[in-house]
Image (tube, rainbow, N blue to C red; front, side, top):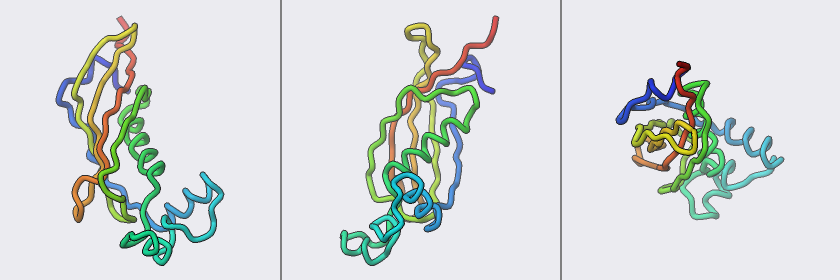
Length: 141
């Protein structure tokens, strides 16, 4: 468990490597949207019809993986805000999620940690980038 006082400006978060498989994406699409048929997320032919090289990871799944990465950092973290920019389609592939603490502040009685967070892979570099604001508990007096 991390407390606000344990976090320093410039601290690195991760990195965490994750293999996103075809089955992961199919399961996500089925559980979130009830989709079982071919889509640009699950089928190579449909993806090519959408001018994609191969099936891609849904944006909301990428966002969920990044949120999970942040909450796995510490059981005490609460995500207040997570804004991301999708720079490139995320392929079904090994990705690396990492982050860095960019600001620490007290605001409206909360101890807040701001950080940059990124998803990348070896072939394409940075795929998704963003900023998160996390609330941490303060160490008991």
